[in-house]
Image: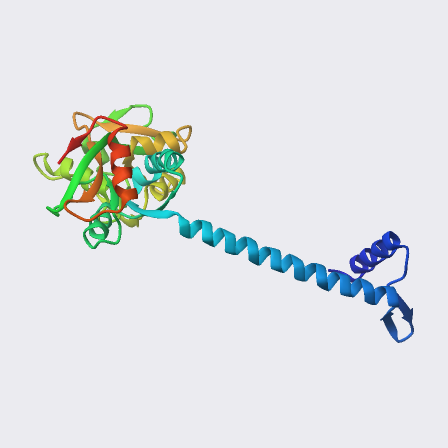
Length: 277
């Protein structure tokens, strides 16, 4: 606080109390009798406030400890666009449960489930772990995201050969979106005329942001474009090459689960048509 600001504050307090807090002289300022009373009052008030804060924190910890925490791990697309609403609706129905979520890639989801660090997962890619049960909860389409100023934007769809000279952005290894695209492309005969940039992006959000900034074009879920900046980014499909994938809820078969995890799985299975794998 500046010296003039401090002086104005002291003068305001003195006006409110109709007294002087300081005796001002050539050697500085000293507290008056009323000033010493005010100092004692201020110390007591701040001390009481600190005690109040400590009490509130203790009550919050007790309340938190009384809740059961459900740990959920999810890959980017279901974690960013499906899980928040599902978790919110679940906790409204089960007030004694709090949800702790982690967003990672699809490979990370499977690893964290089989190591027992998380009880329930969401992913867009089937895992090779036989102990994991995959329950289909939704489907999504993967499209090419381009700026609306790009020549592809007005076409709506392009042949794969037209991508040969484009700067294609890549998702990180382990991404379900990237793996789904590559699986479809590898099913085509002949060489794939694609040149991915050295840049590897770690999330759907970063991919959309990079496309929006004009860094390149890249494959993302249609849901991501609809949720972010559709006015500036266009969705383009590959001609005769639909890239579709399913989104799954995942849990370990035969694992001893918490009551909250069992309740959550039952809750999700009630939401949409289910297919188990």
